[in-house]
Figure 1: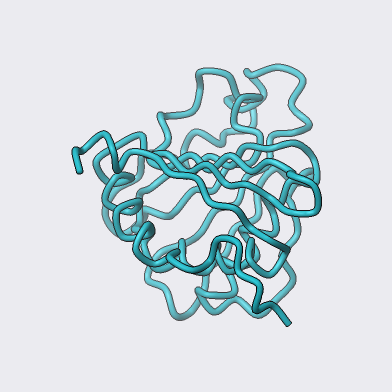
Figure 2: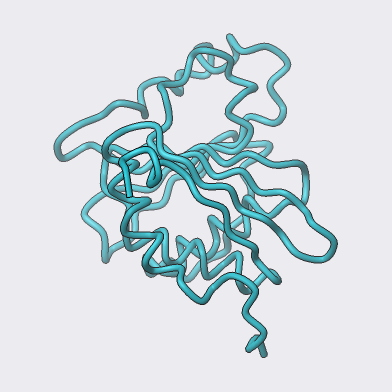
Length: 176
């Protein structure tokens, strides 16, 4: 398997539980400083995936899309880094990203580095850094299809580990 073979893969998700489970598996491979773009139409499962990820990190509170607030920040006691969940759906111009001062959350290193999860990244134009991971979710009938791709060496390392972890998640029929 060449390096380019590990740069992306697709996964069919039978239901909401499978989408949350993918988020939980993703939580185990993310490191501080990584940026993850979440693409997909309304209702594709972006926030559902984030909910699964945050639950796996130990967050017990409500998880909602930050459509109106732009950012939900999670300081979870079991983590030594913050998780930032962005939603740029309401942007009417890419410069709103800079005007809101959100650039300070990206590209951080050391003790202040967090994981940035970004819904509707294209609405910020070229102001965002290249993502380490990009997850595109699409509705396929009653199910979802996730296309995962790496945009950095850190992202590639995450995908390599995740590819092994998701074995059996696709098309599972053992959902309660």
